Length: 459
Ligand code: ADP
Image 1 (cartoon, rainbow, N blue to C red):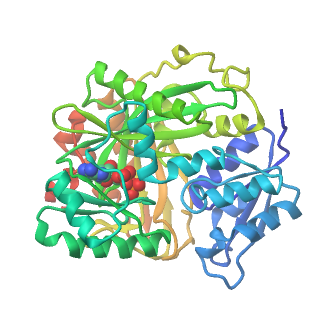
Image 2: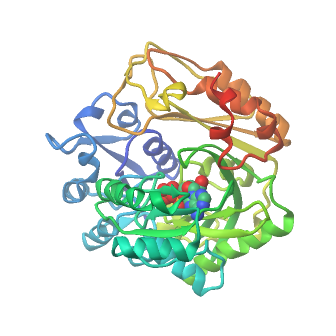
Image 3: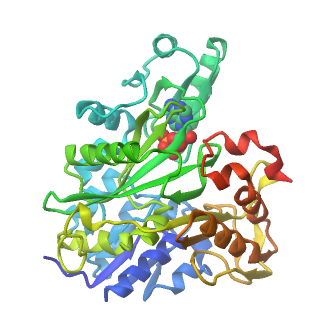
């Protein structure tokens, strides 16, 4: 059993603050790193110590500089690094270099990340253990001829996806064969720019699916539990906007099947730490594995609210060697996880919905959020006087509600989002209220096409 004294968070914004808070609760000293652009950012002040990195390197590069981050960690006597989400969180090389430097990487082992970080490899793992995957060719396309061949095998419409993908990038829907090669080239280009790897694969495009994902926790001793599912179907450009739990669009039987399949995949790789297994569910109630994310996710809050499990604390405890059934984590068995009630999370961003969700920048003149009964806020960069730069994720604050009924969880989160007053930068708060007021949303039946197909949400 290790006992962490100091943990460095190789991230910024709301997730850095979320992790500092968990460390604080566990009596661990926190270390922040920040770029020149983040000199006045809030997250930095929430850590016990903070260090400037990436001088003259660029705002994003600063958080991607493996050598420098490890150097700071070693110099400051850090025991472990938490990567958050995005940036280096799924970078196998980073996880490996941390271990080599004698620093614990708070997440799964790098060898396991290698199997799961790549979507083609993870589909193969799922197929191997008999979990349904989306029909497609589980190989990277090597030439334009192969792109045509694989698309024909799948049958149109198809979706081209980047093996290293994330955040909906490198993804293209192709409905007719005439459009295939143009879309293939552009997906390849986008993947190269975003991930440095331009492997593309082809699978069947599922019309109007629901996105259902399962939260997993595994310890170092082979114990794995699931914390049930989240419905993340409300998306724009394949990116999540509102997430909730439990999912209302699936039967109890399907819920159990999906959760069991998530466990099967996790067991197949002997999964350690927190992870998420993602599925699509088609209009006929068939579910298909799409990917596994070996890291904490933005929407983990809703699962925490209904299960009472602190997922970030659990990650840190697991990394120290605590078992799931230890008194510190206190999950004695799968039956111990009994979710209660309903939780909904809205991502409030500095984006302009009517301008195709383009990120807005500027200085925040007024910053007031809504809280109150049944509301949890996970804030990052928002305060009066904060500078919103164009360099980073546009997430400003996550507003999550909890109640014993779905209707009331909607009422609470809607009320809290309506209370928000932010001036100086545009936000999507009004748009979120429109989604929360929509009949389709109230029934819990939105599919991934919901935002695109309902222009009245933008009024
Ligand atoms: P990323 O890692 O970029 O987030 P995912 O594989 O998780 O990509 O998919 C993100 C979203 O893209 C899904 O939630 C879904 O809306 C859409 N999507 C992915 N694959 C398919 C598919 N085969 N058919 C229809 N939609 C898909």
